Length: 537
Image 1: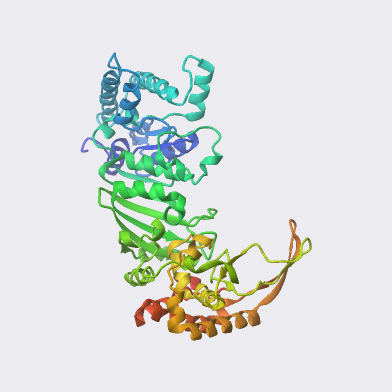
Image 2: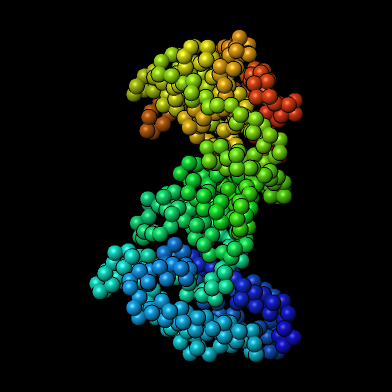
């Protein structure tokens, strides 16, 4: 360090050369990344007109650190390469030769980086060309093995070249051989793409179990998990579906098998009332994890905030430990506090609502889109359009109960803040599908025996109040023309809802503190963490 004129420049240059590595499928992103690192270095230096090159040391050559390629297509580990090569009757010890070439290449990489922090920091260009040539030869060898797995005939030069161009294979095993043979990366961070795999046209993904989850971010996280050391740290931003959708179960299984601890915080999207990234209308999870075994889940509540509260958003996150027996429906609950965990645990002591649903009887209608309140009615909400006239809106899904008083009980329960808390803890905070309704833990028989008359009366009062406060709206759409519908304002019925939740607190055995948590939960949710005016539904 003493041999260099600028201490901070040298430290940052050494870090960039020896500690930072990155891969992106877009070459433009790779170039932008390298440029930003160079600008960071240049900002440390005051130009001196009396010295050669203004006194600025050579910028590092990081073409072998920041790479373009497909993270998901290629051999990531020694075991993956060995499986591919030895499956073809490895009579000539091809695997051993590949490993020797990769190890030798790694020594040359290390020398290439070392030269840039010694002496004048320069490396002969011929040395770089030779390194690129040897790397390319080894890449081609692995590409040929991989192409066969994809059903591509290597002898068909046109088909093979087309496959290489479309799939952009990236073999972590040889690109970062020294790191991976030493156990892997210590820290992995990223914001993987949120793209449905069904929409991929240029390439396909093999040998990753989470491809079945259907979204590109899932195999990305599976790949990350394979690239880390046993105790690696991971930090990623992914859609909320990681925690709350059934189809991401395989990804949750991978994380459970690979992490010792995982902290997941959950964030609203679509500007309701604010969002993490401008222009990104996704509800998001941020996962922070430590590699290991015996997975422990830590979870925040679902975060909503106004723009002026953004500076304090991340410092105000609270996590609570969520034991395995609270992963209801095999999902990761969004709880956030020990009090929320206690309430959720008591909820799960009851059996699902679905066992009371019948094929005949009285019908209730649950709105499938949830914003600030649940909406459930024992009548068909008014809806009319120019094409079909008066009809039931498809946004309301019917559920039948017999006898009829069970329907009244169910309508009271599904409008409650208790159900609202349950849905926000488990769901995607927008689509209230039948899986959440039918799996809601409540014993209607017990509620009928203990509080039936009171609950039926509250349900009927609530229906009358919702009708009284409804406002008929008229909208014009290019697709459906003129439509009329009743818009409901459940916030005006909050006193009745509180009475319902007070009765339900006895059903679940909530303490006074837990009941207070439920009564205020939807208010805090609507107002966001920083307060504000009430919003209508």
